Length: 106
Image 1 (cartoon, rainbow, N blue to C red):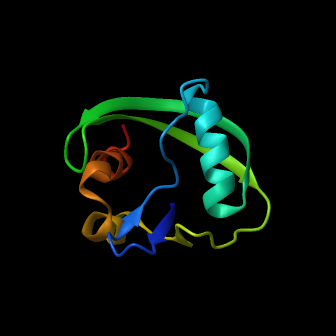
Image 2: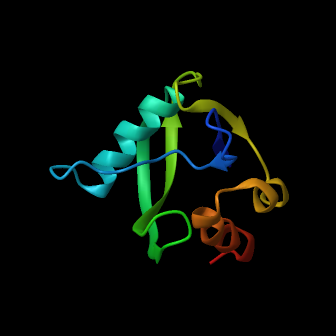
C-alpha cells in the first residue's frame, strides 16, 4: 500500500485529508493524493465509509485507486510502500480499520 511517513512524527497514514465543502469525496481524494504524492488518480472505486473518534471525530471514506506519475515527497511527508504487517504496527489509530479490511479481504 502507498502510505505517507508523516513529517509531524505521528507515524504512517494513507494519503488523504479533509474535503472542502464544494468537493465530493472522490474530488478530495484526487486533490489530496496529488498534493501528498505527486500522483494523478486514473481510476477509483469506493470501498467503504466509517466513523471514528480515534484521532478526531470524523467520517473516513476509503477508495481503491490506480494512479500514474512520479511519486514525490510533500510538506506532509514521504510516500513509501508498506505491507499489511508493517502498517498494522505504525498506521494512525483512526486508519487501523482500513488495514484490517485489507488484511481480511473484505
